Amino acid sequence: MDRVVKVYTDGASRGNPGPSSIGILIINEEGKEIKRISEYIGTTTNNIAEYRALLRAIMECRKLKFGSVQFFTDSQLLANQINGIYRVTNEDLKPLYVKLKGELLSFKGWGVIYIPREKNSIADFLANQALDRRERK
Image (cartoon, rainbow, N blue to C red; front, side, top):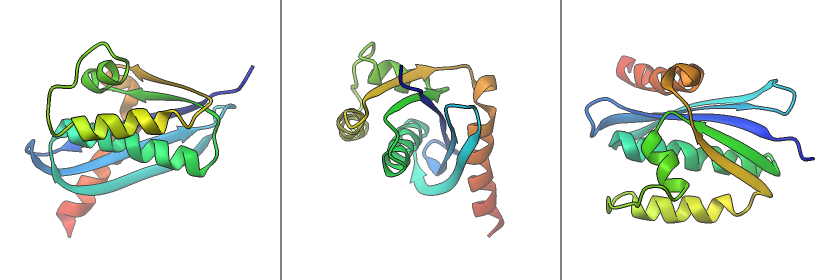
């Protein structure tokens, strides 16, 4: 059985739309931290930030050549749209959705799982850290 890398993602927006960022925590099969990403992404909405966080995480996992990945998000909308439970009706999300679905096919196995915000605290911290850094400039 393949071991699965765990990736926690979060997108943040102050103002919605407003200054936005992403936070990503990547943990290997043994539970050891591999990488943290905390990046400002410009002005956008919270939902787009959530999508962009997942897309950035996918790209990082491909670069690191992971075969099977479980992505965890505290965005119920994102998880339910990627898993086909909700339709994507927002025109700004549709191209991101199509890109995400295509990119996920590069993995041998994948899942996008909704978790409560309190179980996503590190990714949330990383997203907010990027916004805080931006505000201090």
